[in-house]
Structure formats: C-alpha cells, structure tokens
Length: 250
View 1 (cartoon, rainbow, N blue to C red):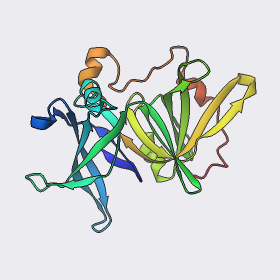
View 2 (cartoon, one colour):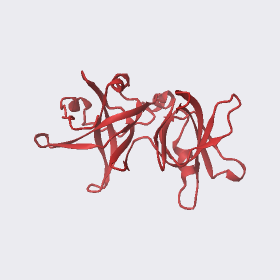
View 3 (spheres, rainbow, N blue to C red):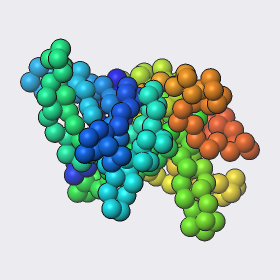
C-alpha cells in the first residue's frame, strides 16, 4: 500500500503503481494516468482507510508530462509522485474512497528538502543500498543520484537515515535492493579528512516500503527503480563508520 508522505503546498505520495492508462476523447494524447492504492490515516476513526488515487500527468505548452509518464511509468513500478491538491473523486463501485490529483513531478531516485518555519524536512526515494541494525537504532543507507555542477555529471551521494524506537523495528525488516521512500529531518554533512570522504546522515520519521517489480527485474536483472550504483562503492564500507548523531533531533 502507498501513503501520503508529505502534505503542504505540494503533496508527496509514494507507492507501487497499480494501473497506467491514457486519456480518451479530448484528453487523447494529452493525459497519462497512474493509479495507486493508499492507506490514509482517518483521525475520526483513528485507523487507516484504503483509498484509491488517480494521479494525472498532463501535457502543456511548456511540459510534456503525459508523454514522459507514458514512457517511464509501468504497472508495478514504485514511484514518488509530487502532486498538487488532492481532491475527492467519485467513490469506487465498492464504496472505496477515491482521490485525484495532477502530477507536478515523479521520481524513483530523488532528494528534496522542504523548509517549514524553523524546521527542515527531507524526502528521499531510492533502492536500499545497505541496512545497519544497531542496539538502539536502525540505519538505512540510500544511494541518491545528485547533479554536480563541478563535474557536470550525476554523482552518487550515500545518505544514512537513522530510525529509533518503534520505527527502528520496522526499518530493520526492510530489504536491501527494494525501493523505499523516506520522510526525515535535515541532512547533516560530516567530513572525514583521513578518508577524504563526506558522509550524509539524517533522522528518519516515516517510510513507505515498496516491492520490487518482478516483471522488470526478471527482464533487466535490476529492481524497477534501480539506481546508478557505482561499481567501486561497497555499502559495507559505510557500516564501518559510526557517525556521531547525538546532536540530531531524533
């Protein structure tokens, strides 16, 4: 099941796509739809409610979002969708609530930081590179592809996300290689001069685990949202370095 990971001026939803369809009639060639099934917390009943979401990607004068979605999104793929307003739609025939929203962006390997007053939050999505289970926390390490202005190319930035308390037990059950979307705090940078390396860590608040698209994995030999893993980087190297996170707001 997918979930709403972040709500604000924009909304970030993550999950495996259950269906992909194209617009018809006046929307033919201009619209691509991605359907997801979400668990949404209902404060009145104090339980999660299954809800269907239709995320609409439209072509416009400036952006060919529908064309991009048609080419990139397949049923079973795990994505983060950046959407506008989440609007109520006509319930399904079985009574299941439905929402609809327009897609602003969608990603499978991504980092985005948001400022809320004095607080900074971060959303990550990637395949899990490594999991370190410690006595008081679980660290999930993600390889995120970021653009370097210095080299004019994409580079892999490893980010360690620390989960504590009840979230640590859930994070420990995640699977290396599987996709995950994470909401956390500010990313802290640590430079280790003797290793000539920079490490990135943050506190994890929530995560949405995805499943591997078996159809694509069997065809390509990689998970459906595979990252650009660098052959000369071993995730185990990061497990040797226990970054001091005592100053992080866990």
